[in-house]
Length: 394
Image (cartoon, rainbow, N blue to C red; front, top):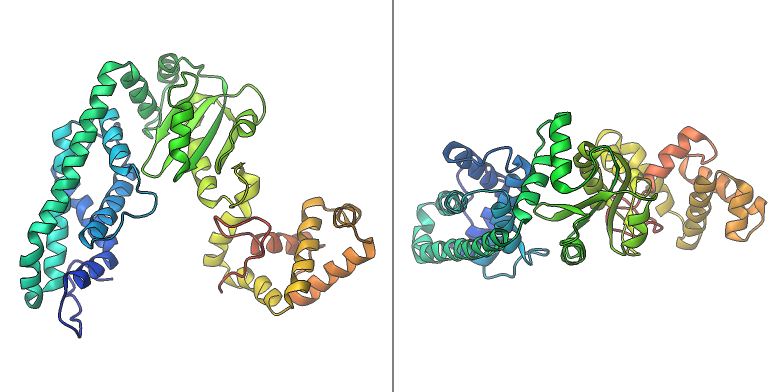
């Protein structure tokens, strides 16, 4: 990846528009950083209206979308409804339309500066042929945002939803709340400040279904980001909402008070990002903690993360599957007897498989410290079935 000050690498073949955009894609982190610098230096949004992470995530998704359109490619996965959701969110956040569109138009200047540097003198003719295409693509995006913003603004003007949305935005702004402010927000939401809450988070295509089901429910609060939606309500029974919702995503229950909901939402979003694939059920911390730990373990203690799967990969597939099944069942139950009953085999068979696992990997599942390493090393990758063995790359 090139920094903003490095010259672009000259290709062997003649410079093309597609090559320039390919280089631009590789520099996406720099492009986003440049946008953020210019945005903050001009007319930034108030921090109590728009979270900084929202701005960062939106900038990245916007540039990804624009670059794909400039290349004549289809929009990125999960981009359906992105323009409408972004415009609606800014309207709900109270960002003036003119301020919003000025921020979006920074995209053109940032892209233009980067493609000029990438192309250099050799590609100046290519840029000249495509500058109108670039300008039209950005303006088409601006026009679509303007139309969607005005539609959402009109909808908010016709309802009392504006106050509710702004109340939730204040709750999720990241700014500390006093007891009095929490009581005020709870009153506006018609909720209790000291109640116990439950929170769910979904991403991707499931967002539309959640909005359709709960968007107008007065007992449910919702907070939408670029690629996820968080819903919260007062909890009336343990994990009740989890049982009601048939969707991939995340669930956090027993949240102590309205003021604790934003932190629970952060946890729910982490769970959703690491949730296993498979049945449409909301995941909890219990399902994903090992996967989250594995992501960190790879960085700080890579040997432990790779030794178990590497050793198992050397075994025949059938033998590997039997050992992993026995070990996982034993680690869930903590009992040789219970493991044998679940696997419909003799207890000696379980003991032999646990011993074979220890011999093959050097990690004994009957030793608590070593068992902890095994649980993490065999954790599934985010978005994969929970029971499948993952051969993690070293």
